[in-house]
Length: 614
Image 1 (cartoon, rainbow, N blue to C red):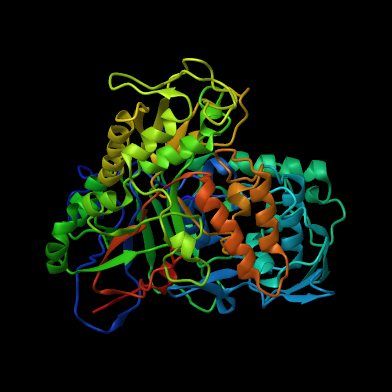
Image 2 (spheres, helix red, strand yellow):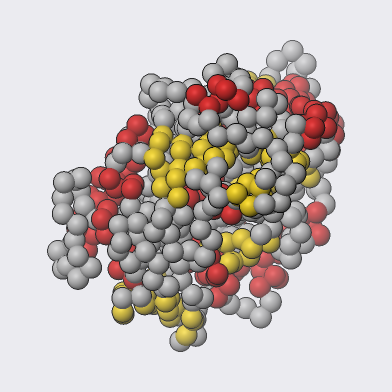
């Protein structure tokens, strides 16, 4: 998933909070000064810097593609609402049953029946997190599956024939065929989120149905749609997040007590939390920033507990250490890319030509970008299967570059396919048609090679990379018009669409965070590249890719063979334009804050693990 309001009540910026005193006026006077002590302190306030221009903006766990971000899921919602299964053991990319709401699933009947037994944790209103809460989630998903951002046709929930609560804490699913237990657990059960029956309503004043009610709204398709529409509407009212009674019922370790429409979020411990790790801090605050420079200006005052060092300010690392910060680069299990809109009515036919995608990929100078713009803190990306962190999934083809930087190679590909290059303007298609030496289906005579590319604002390295791509494109007649926008704007604009839709005007996008594998933790790509998938933002359509994805899901004696075939195909076919994978952030953490490392490979923010020392 890509890692990435109304009138502002409070706007955190370098000007508004440029000192410890100013930060105190924004919410607390608790000191977070550095200490070399080892005595654990009960209480204290930790301030976490949100990524620039990327505030949380959606609270309801049933998330749609326009707000489908790691920030919403794993820096915000996870503090209050826990998925059925918890992923990440420290820095390891694996499932963690000890912190999960349920015991390991039991597969039977040739892996067509899945039995889940919950642990009986509590909601903050005293109700039990039980099997009926899972039925509620599944009813919403079945009725509103096309809204669910991670929906892939024929996969979850289509592959679930039936489900029911067979006891207060036992939930059983029957599947349509045999699946790999690992794949189904990591990529399908990972999507289950028990939600409280307190939400099973279509108005705030409606009564809460009982677990045995036969007339609860979610029990019919029409009712489940109405419930979703109500909850989604409530979730769009950001100003009410801290006061709306719906969002006060939580099963996670934290409760939201303050929220501004620009993204400042204040949490206090949920005293009813049943998990094994209870919060030690008395308060946790997330602070929004418009740019990385604004965040750095506050960071260097020592006022942020857990912030980040912009790559452009890397030479300041030693000075931050003298201020009591520990440097901790945070790497996620994912890959970075730029989607192309294959359905754009103007440039879509060009994007669908493999030779063009190859030419464009040849213009991404990954090694130079890493060296010049990322100060060496990045790794090249050639495939949707991550090479780092170390894992057993990536094969040799995912580690080798089939399209190294070459302006000449890009120019040759274009000229060999009917384009007349010019040094004074965009290349023009002079040989329309579908022959091997022609421009390709749907590309018109004299159609220019012009691309509008919107990218994340506020991060210097992203801007530098896009300027480099624009410059390289100009050398072969690809005219790239750049525009900047905040993270939430970029990802909202870069949505799957049809050529007849007015919203299908976007052509190419870069939200600066690519994709991390969550809530699909196995890198098989069904939510990314299969036809109609929820996160297939560019509407890539390949029947070969669809079949290769299906083969990664079946129970086989050697599933790595299927995964190799899938990744090797997409290395060559370029469903997206790959760019260097960077660290999610270069974290700077106060030395008296313990428990913040190791950082989750899935971007989970877990302040319940944190505590101060003196």
